[in-house]
Length: 104
Image (cartoon, rainbow, N blue to C red):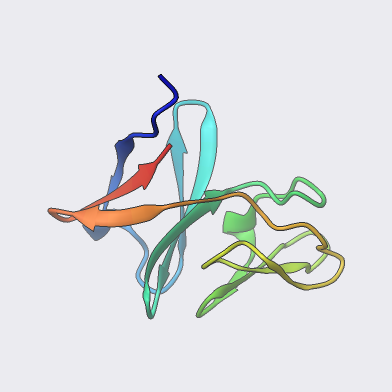
């Protein structure tokens, strides 16, 4: 018990290229980022103001919250611009047979 498992999330072909795509896993809204170095996944809601990060500006590896313009590095969740001060929740992600999977 307590072992993490890989779950299918979304087909790579369904992602918006070089952008962020919202995917719901059950009741959990997730943001899936298509970056120059691979696919990354985080919770979709900003931990600062609760806004949907999928509505924010995405550039390479940085997502900017649409509410207060705090920004996070999607590769590890660390805040890179105020007012964000806490890392966002990210999930290990991989692509298997054209499907994005996350470890939960």
